[in-house]
Length: 503
Image (cartoon, rainbow, N blue to C red):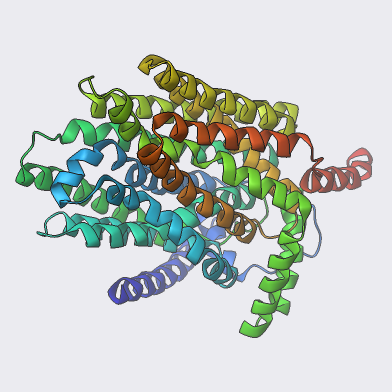
């Protein structure tokens, strides 16, 4: 870890020197028209704007969102690749099924333990440093897992690698709204969030279907070792490349904000940052934000709903194969079929993200969209329950697929709601604090599900998500939420109307 941190410092310093050289070189060849790279080089020295109104979108945002997409994709792959081969890994590591569950659950524990310190850390670091940390911890975690598969007793080291990668989960879930708000104009924000949210789904889909087709219970230990070791080594190389590109290209923010609302938020946040230069002032400011959010009824509603609905598909990734083996033991190829269904479900999650983004951009009613999609997600959970009750594996599969579709649509709307009810607070810190509830519920779902599966059977295990999602619908339906960011954008546009008419 020390070597990794020294490497980050070295690459950052190298980037700083290289950036200055590029700026000098571009300046020497100046044709009177600033290039994008020249503008980006000057981000660090740009003074805060005196007036709100000048906005601009930069092409660099597309590269940033693609590299972020790739990081989130492999984070999803990392989480989705173990559940479908639970019985293979129990034999490989000589452990119990519930111990393999902890390859994913350990990341939820990290969610809760690391949320507050990481939230404070990112208030001091800025966007670029946060992104480098996000990519770096996943890279180190995957490298650790690669080594673990070539050791005689590698289970504890895989668990440790997953714990390191768990820090990426926290950061990558937080970075989606921040990237969209900092780099994208208002009309592109839902699409940008959908694109990054879909990356997790596509990664989970790839992970769920790749490992069951790569290894099976019939493989020898050396075959499992070689195949999974090579898989994680390949991912390590890709993530190292992404990290190197992020060191060079990422910036804390564009020279000019992409929207009027972001311009106003940046101005207030810059004033707050200047006021809280010292560590003690920063701690006080963070404590104020923490108390303010958790005393805000509207934030608590979105926080609770987020934590309730988001873990449902992840819970299926961990437990679906075990539920099928418990209830449909006579059927063959359950690991492969579970992996395929989960792949389709995660692909539907991506479809749900992309399809809800234009709808949300058009109707601008995030709460109404979320109520509808959460209700449909709850009905999909009920389908799974009916399938287990009637011993119909087809109905279970249909329910799992629909859960993915409606959860994807829900996620985009929930991120939008979160930004709306907390504006103009810093989106990165807000989203990270939102992860506390999500981390707790992601840990709770599979633990309760595994206990219910072991003690009471598959019906009780599948009934739990249905009851929880029904509760989420009630919470949303009986709380009227404010839309602070939309109101701020409307006010700034109204201020510009006389200028536009005069022009």
